[in-house]
Image 1 (tube, rainbow, N blue to C red):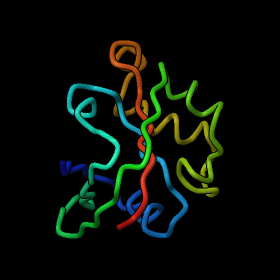
Image 2 (cartoon, rainbow, N blue to C red; image 1 turned 90 degrees about the horizontal axis):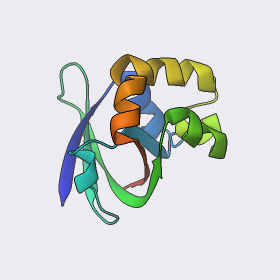
Image 3 (cartoon, rainbow, N blue to C red; image 1 turned 90 degrees about the vertical axis):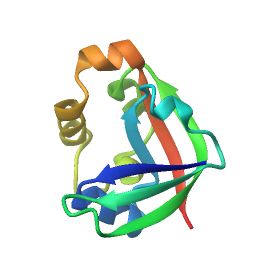
Length: 113
């Protein structure tokens, strides 16, 4: 199955340059459909006219972003140019602590195809 997700340019480029190898999302109804072996088409915001595809090679489920960040270095969650605290702040702009508690969070291990 193929899924589509939008990414801000910075994170889009982190995946393309090979640093970001885990995409982090809320484990909501849409993300619960993702299975190992699926593909994801990432579209760069805001125009959505650039894209690339990745293969899902692993799924990591956690209660919160903070829990996930205890197990992984920032260098594969984003890029060494950010701190974990900065990335958590960005993620929580989209996914509140209440939503994290409701759905949990998902780390999607990916590789470019």
